Image 1 (tube, rainbow, N blue to C red):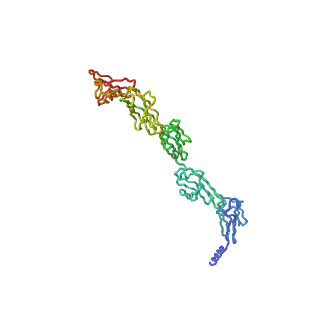
Image 2: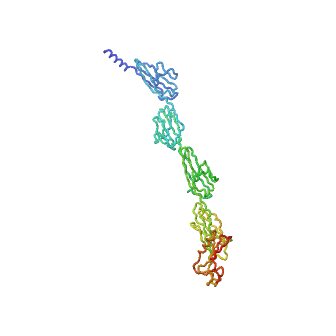
Image 3: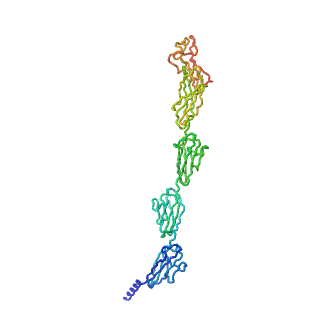
Length: 481
């Protein structure tokens, strides 16, 4: 029993004092491809090297790239390639027990990156860019020269080979650079994945200042668009396609981004829009255009002329014309007796559409009157209205007192205080209306009137003649009172 115990102690001591194995790389510790790696295996004591292993697999030393000494104490690996990287092991037999040492060989080859050249995403989505890589120890990501590996809004996987943008927008579009390195900083690899971000179409519409143009000038609308894919663009006026308006004065040019209107007219006033859209979305932008110009000519309605002692009074009215999209500043009434060379003018405030004009005149030379009216705004005067003519046969005549201080015998037998002789004329009214109007216009103050003919004291009651005429060719009618 004591003998066996002593024997075991002896063996243990022999092992402790026996052989040890040490493996070293005597060549470049960071070799590159095509170089040679040299291992030296030293066994102290009575041990013997029996084999070489790589990654727990026995090396086939018949490979011409493996060169070893007869006692296997060294191993040369010729013309290194990236697959030569791994864990090498020298195994020795010492006192019937295998002992070994290990060394990791790292062949510094360029990292190899594979990546998708182009990725397309829609604004608002999450997108991931990948740079799968081999033979690297570190990877970083940059965008526009800025490291985004730890920037807010970006995230990386554990290996840092995938870059995720949590909520992508158009500002993220562009080329990214992923850079992989290993132990030797001189050997790097890069990938350049690009990101395209689709976003909805948008537009900015510009036109004349304050949306106002002057008649006769050219007008341009500009629609600056944005969006990806490239937006489609349509021009409309009052919700109708400009291409369907059928006017040669409208022209769409510069890839549809400009709408031109040549020699603008007041009828071009309206709401204009450019509508843009793509596969993501679209919008419409609107602009109101007002084309200002001189007003249209007014339309004369009636002209009434009343004759007094030594003057006449004219009453003329007309319609309110189209303002030319600019406030009317006033009217000008033009009148003259037919045959005169010159026209008289009267300015009328814009709030009125009629005028009463007293005119001193020689009653012995009464002739037909002619009228026309024009309107004006800040852009000029309208064309002349249609000419209105009033025949002298249709004047409203009020017989005035004679120049004598006492009435003649003939006059004494004439009309009483309210007697009056009137000729009524209102262009365009019926005879019965004119007759009624004339009877109302009786004068209730005693005056001496010049009668058209003397009265027989024993004869019938004198006649109040009321004449009504619609025109020069109309037949006068008389009503006996």
